[in-house]
Image 1 (tube, helix red, strand yellow):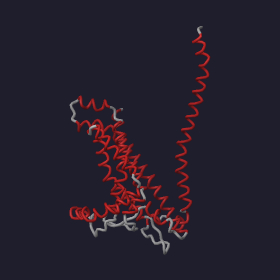
Image 2 (cartoon, helix red, strand yellow; image 1 turned 135 degrees about the vertical axis):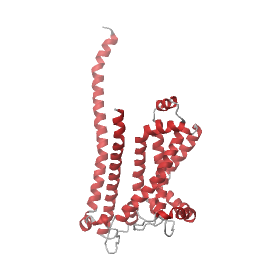
Image 3 (cartoon, rainbow, N blue to C red; image 1 turned 90 degrees about the horizontal axis):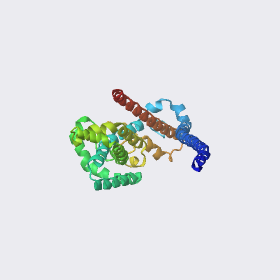
Length: 323
């Protein structure tokens, strides 16, 4: 037996033992980190539930179904804020999702390299803009322009739907949804771009080999392959939309009402908590704001759970077909 063989045999048990210990440490460390996220969510929910006990005992389920918010008479209902949160988030998704995915497709499949770098830089810069700055831009630029030019056109063209009727104040549910769309657009675009870049090149080459055009390659080979990831990018943007606070507070009008027209002012769950928490002078008022935070957490969890359920439902037929 030569020297090299003896050396290899001498160090082999020690190396295997070291690797085994390292694997166990890595396994438990990642388990603790992953479990800490679950613990953090549970603790947040517990604190919100504990702080809202007074409102829950006093109003019960009527707190969710009531539309009255009167701190003077200590009558509180969350329905206008739930309505405003869902409507403004839906408007934001309707605006941002097509723009984001189209931008990601252009940067991934069509644009020259030098344009990709410039566009990517501006997208990252937009994502880094603080929400309060976007809120100021919304107040002094977006809202006046929409009030004078954009909203009147919507009322004249789509007024028959009932969604664009009544007086135009500028600050409104529609303005809140538009500012949220600006905020979630770079998030969805960046995530979608990375997802489309991860599509294997063989997918594209196979489609081109069959005589497909660029549009057909993008639609069949790229978007179809990446649809699950794109759906996840949309859900990530929705999570940001549901919890957005400062920019929305500046342009939505902050009026606790349920209005049919999108030109009317509204309110969101996050906005009312940010606006009134420092002004709350009674225990019931504070507990009601805690309850709104608990509802916002519940709405976020339910929306994400529903999205995962839809994703599995849509993915199941394709998985069975491939099998």
